[in-house]
Image 1 (cartoon, rainbow, N blue to C red):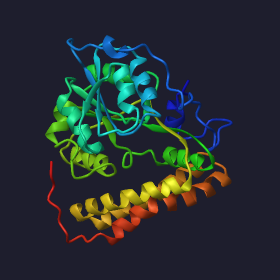
Image 2 (image 1 turned 90 degrees about the horizontal axis):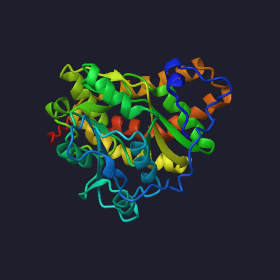
Image 3 (image 1 turned 90 degrees about the vertical axis):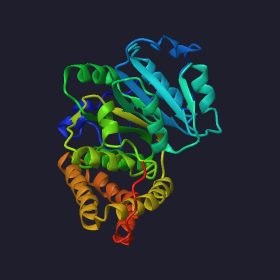
Image 4 (image 1 turned 30 degrees about the vertical axis):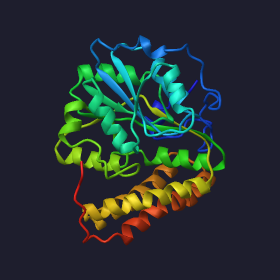
Length: 323
């Protein structure tokens, strides 16, 4: 059973006996939970839907079972699930079909898949998850209840990693210390708000689309709140090579984004200041000297390519947004 880190995040302090390397308990990712065939048939297909959960997937057979089980566990007829498959070649589609999840096939990357799911959704609110994430205990209920009782345009949801290995501790501490208004982006949107700001852009795939959508949301004057529940990233064991590869893949998309925004100075400040604040929060939270030292090389490996992308982008090259 996944632990609930809500108070851990809210206090901005490390719980007694927990260091950055303390693993978050998780079920065996190699053995997806067994559910009866067509388990999702219980979810309403004709009734009123308050919340649409949209999950873009691509070769996530190792974790999609956990994602589906997490959504199904709250057994809410006012929640629908839409899985958009971008062309998986593993057993992702088989798992989704076995459980009766609504599956849409469209060869695309994450940002486009999210938009496709949003266009098909019936819910008044849209919650975007990934195929390697599990909603924390009570997250869907909180989303439904709060969207019915509060004037919410968007909701930011804290994320924690379910991972192990030497570098997992650094990533976990980095995510904990980095959670802030500027670096955490909404995952839940009121449907009308989402489309009024243009939704996810098809020309910003996989890395910068969340930040861009958040900036458009803020520029239009819409507000947001924070959830008390969390989302868990099912990562497993990680190593610095994987971190570096992911950072390098994000660099090209980042460079295009920064050229489009023509805001070299402000974006550079955001990244640098965010990293310095994360380091300060880690120290303030009571992290050990060893944990802080581990955070430094992780910062270089994970965020170095993005800094390079900012510095090497040509601010004079304007890219016309495509929606």
